[in-house]
Image (tube, rainbow, N blue to C red):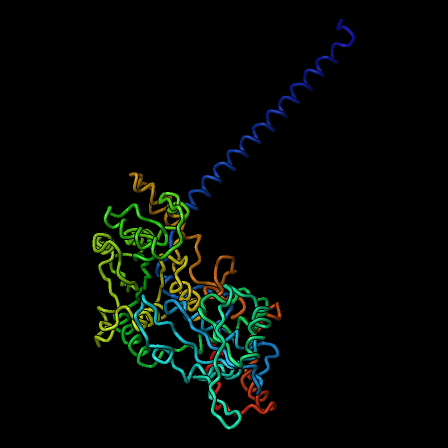
Length: 516
């Protein structure tokens, strides 16, 4: 006979086996899932690895605009300049061509803020440029005055006044404005002095008005000055256009602002790659022109503070996929260190030009260090298919061009991230060349190629005026909607209603700001 209770342990045993089977099944499923996820991750990694490619053909076109277009015309109530101004504003714009350009934009805005009559800005004939062309020698004065007729009153000089039967010239009171002065400084101290003396003279006038202003219409005025009113004189435009036509006769071309010059290298403190004699020259230049500061080459390079060498520029372009048939126009002064630094770049990209090699008139050869050469380089870089600055830190030339090309229709720019690229180049110099091109491409894919993007400090407004100076036809945010097409007619009506009719000009430049 079977003992009572015999079946119960067997049942429990079977139940234990079943539970064990279930646990094993679960474990197997978990392992399978983990293996699947691991394989997916590896596949994704391989996919990402293979996707680190850059379509160089696409870069010859413009960047995606996402429906945005340039527009610096007023979008809200923008009264014309009052018939009676508070006085005259003179400014002396120091620095190179592009630093002066930013100063001119600030001068117009300062005049608007103070309801002042702007005297045609003075351009500093400084010791570096040795150029006394002045505003009238570089810019189209008539276009400047006409384009800004809705914004400020502009005269070429302070007029003489008749008082007590005598002709008297107003003497402008000289003031040194604080750097990056807020609007409040102009509406208080500067305005008070202007009313007391009838005119003020602000000098020096570089970076003397804050860039970030929480009033879009003031920022749009800066854009109207920079991209519409400041037009180079006809002969400069014609010369630039002839160079561009010659360069484009054989297809696309790229411009590179190769900032490997003595002043920038001395400023950056990047000396170690040069000979002892060259280092001595750089250190002397730094002592004479810049504040004393402890600079360690390795530390500076690691944080992206050293200008790219010509060879590094060539390696970046080659890694991106550009070949030796690429036509390149170099906008640069005299490269420090000479041909030994250019030789590696030239071996990779032999089709190199600069304004002296493509200028058939010989005009630039007579003015290589002056504002004319800088103006021509600026126009050629603006009109090129691709623009690449190699050092856009304190470089006004590169920063202004980046902003102008953005406004000019999101034209492609290649902006190397020197901080991200530094360790890649250092590894290569140590002999670790495997995966170099791939690493460069990955770094470059994280950069912006000229499309609309948020402005984040320390990026300058003159480098990126989005979104204030751009609009969308169909925008969710009312502030982003394009202004009406009759904006010029409205402004004309305002001027007529207020009895302001002594400025005769067409609104063609402002219209282009709306329709661009």
